[in-house]
Structures are given as structure tokens and as C-alpha cells.
Length: 264
Image: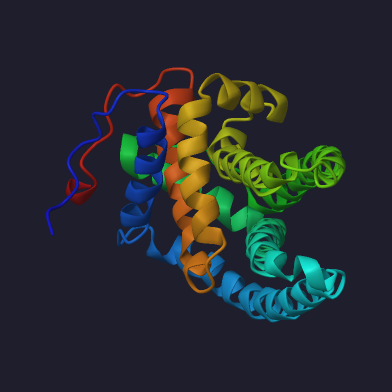
């Protein structure tokens, strides 16, 4: 397979966003990054075992609950409802897996983003002692968690209301996926932004201004987070991809072109 060429796609489009994640997956195999990827992956494996067990339990419960309330004359809707249940449970699974991983592995992801930036730009980032970085990053994660909980609750209430409206209720999985995409993008681009002390509110504004790249990165990342086993490696790849996105489109002096990953 040919090595990826330098990224020359234009800014703020879905293709560029997805390409950041694909290049991030390649980049995390770099010898200088492997040790910084290994620790988050070990954390992910532990969380994977817990969340995957919960996935199967919740799926069985959800399908049984949906079908038990259907009258006999609406039994033909069972397959449709089960399909919707599959999408919703997988979204919940991917969201929960990502959330738990980020709370526990946040300091390691911050270091990974720092090392990716140094490797790609050739510039050293002024680090800080672990004794300062760990509490700061955990505090930042708590702020993000509060954002995700409060906004997520509002989204859930809106989706709940839509679920009772015929035809419009078909939009519920789509809108749920859109929210999951946004949260994944915010989460993983925040690591390089936090390394440069960019306020969380300012980062969200930047991501929205570049919404197409944001949704390209987050869309592919969300799909990966929903797939058992693949999600173990997708999240570190998303940190690497989010850092590439930061360097190419979001930082104060964006890079005009990212280097060929194979030549780093």
C-alpha cells in the first residue's frame, strides 16, 4: 500500500476532517509515539471489558422493552424498532466508552498530543511538571464533563419530545449521531488546545467556525468508537488526528501543509 502523501486538501471540509483521523492512526505507530500511545490503550482495554459487557446487557433489555409494548397488529414494526434500538445503544456505548476513557486517561492524552505536535512541527513545547499537569488536566476534564452533561441533557429532552411525534421520531438517531460527532471532536481537539492554554469556550467557537472539518473528524471517530475492539485504538488515533487538525486549521498560525507521515 502506498504511503500517504502530504495533506494538501483544503481547509474546513468533511474530507479533510476524516483525513486527519486516518493520518492520526498512521502517525500513532511512529516509534517516537508508541510509548505514549501504549498507556492509553491499556486503559482502554480495561474500560472496554466493562462497557462491552454493559452493551450486551442494555441491548437485550432495550429490544425486549420495545417489542413487549407493541400490540399484535403492529408487530411488523418490531424490526424497525430493533434497528433504531441498535443504533441508539451503539451510540450510548461509544459515548460512554469515550467519556470514561477521557476522564481516566486525560493526562496521557495531553502528553500524546504534545509529542505529536513536536514530531510534526519540529518545535519543542514548553512542558510542565506532572504534579501540575495532572490536576490541571483533570480539572479541565471535569469542566468538559459538565458541558457534555448539561448540553447532553438538553439534547436528550429534545430527542425525547421528538420521539413521540410520528415521522419526526425517525430523526432521533440522526440527531443523536450529530451530537455524538460534536462531542468526539470537542474532546479530542481539546488536548492540543489545552496544551496551549486555549480556553474551552474559545475552542468550541473555533470548531464551530470550521464545522465541516469538525464533523468529518468527529464522524469517523464516532463510528470507530461504536465498534468493539476498534474503539480501543480509535481514541488515541483521534488524539493524533485532532492534533493534526489543530495544527492545520485552528492554531494561531496554522501550517500551510502537513508533512508526509511516512517521512517523519
